[in-house]
Image 1 (cartoon, rainbow, N blue to C red):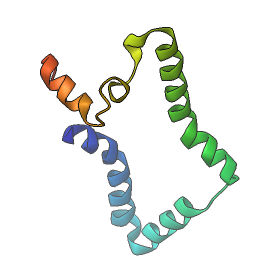
Image 2 (tube, rainbow, N blue to C red; image 1 turned 135 degrees about the vertical axis):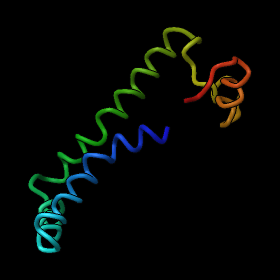
Image 3 (cartoon, helix red, strand yellow; image 1 turned 45 degrees about the vertical axis):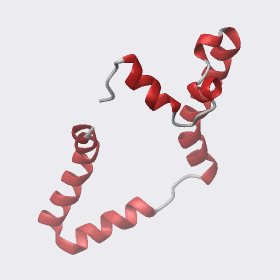
Length: 95
């Protein structure tokens, strides 16, 4: 799990480090201003951020209507943390 977070943050941290080394505080502030400038409407940010979760939920609902095997664990057990116990009983590891 930690290696995944490092891999995700690596390019951003490298960019910040290089901007600081080569341009100093002025380069970092210029980069921050450019990052915080919205170039498109908020609707496009909503589309970009909500498309994947909505498609995932839609696919889950469609599959669970097709077969009860695809029901979420919370629907089967009524326990919100039942998925963790279910995985540990099944012998699978969460990595």
